[in-house]
Image: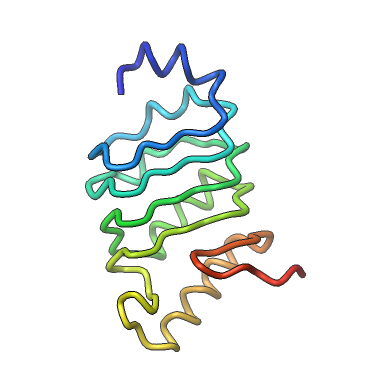
Length: 132
């Protein structure tokens, strides 16, 4: 994305869908200070460590992004998006799910890992969390 556009649009953008843009460096998102929803579906080469800190982000989707290591991915996301309530990262090879015919035990471990990182999460992938 052009940095001039990001500087101009960022402060007035609340929802951003960048599906299928083949993004790698996501640091330009630092200009989107009021962002509540971010959709990065289909960006298979994104470098998650370039995500900026967005404390207002509540919804994040990264489906079909070729995520292979969910503990690393979730650790970065938890650090960058501390108030996340809705997370969907389906159809990624490293995310245990019924889509990839993962073992039930693997799915439970994954879900518990995410819930421990985001105890306030309301919706994970295709499951709504029970309020605590």
